[in-house]
Length: 142
Image (cartoon, rainbow, N blue to C red; front, side):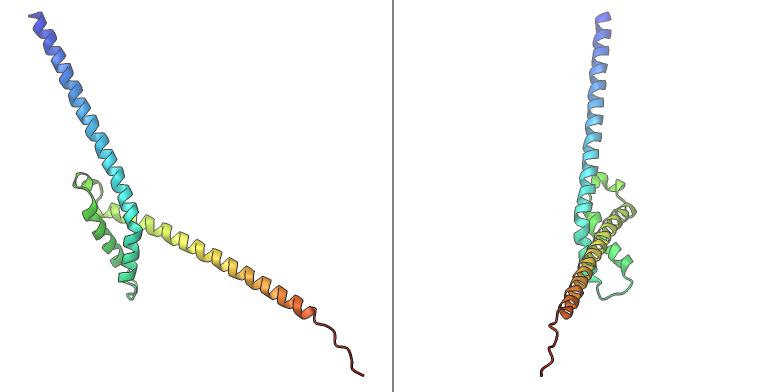
């Protein structure tokens, strides 16, 4: 009779460990899928933003339409297992983050280009001024 109790406890422990293993495995798999989904969203967002910009280039004040186009394009790509973790408002916030980064980079590039042009302009003016200062003096003809 005591032997049956020990076997019962051993079986309960094995089942408990098996259940715990399955739960941990599924959580890790879900976390990996969640991370992969975030990467997928961030990877596709710039391309979708560019497509939306092109689609609405002739429409003024079309930011909401562009965002809706991006979100509607991303949502079907999200795996069903994690779709509840990525509702439209979360996806929209992620796309907005990418857009803000793209905008900041573009502004920085424009600023750098403007600085470069300004520097070239100053250098050109300086060399023009030097050239005009170095004109040979006219010698009176007798």
